[in-house]
Image 1 (cartoon, rainbow, N blue to C red):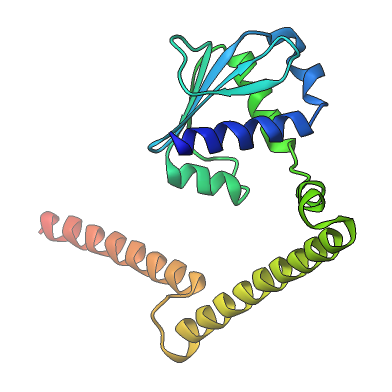
Image 2: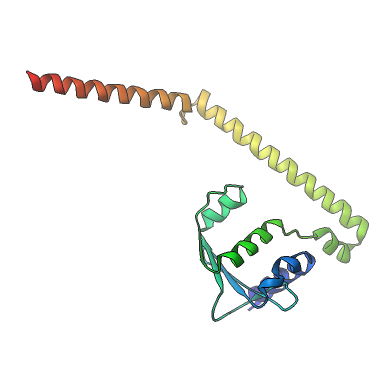
Length: 186
């Protein structure tokens, strides 16, 4: 299948670009792991050189990591409290997951093979600038909508007002309980 070929080539290329992985995986040779993110399945087996390789199918896995798509998005946003289910060899799963956090794709090097060194450098520089500007603009727009919905057309309640409302409800509940007790005494 074309998708499996793309996944295999891209994944194996990415792991081969990060040679530092060999020292982390040298004691885990021939071990396999399955990542399940929603409907997406990714299987890796550490080869004899100590580099993980993508595999389409493996009978038995030494470790398995499952998470929902929303948990994966939370992890990408930096939320460490995402719901992750780990089965099997916990030590191996920990080594793999920590390595995946630090892995980097040298896309400038790959792009330079296609269009040359100087154009690749400038294109990557431009891409980073566009990404940074887009991110800043997105946050600014989100802040603008938040302020509009809080101040001009209140669709969202301020935390301070919600806390105040909750305190008033608690006070009212306490007063009603006291009133009930007084009525029962009569």
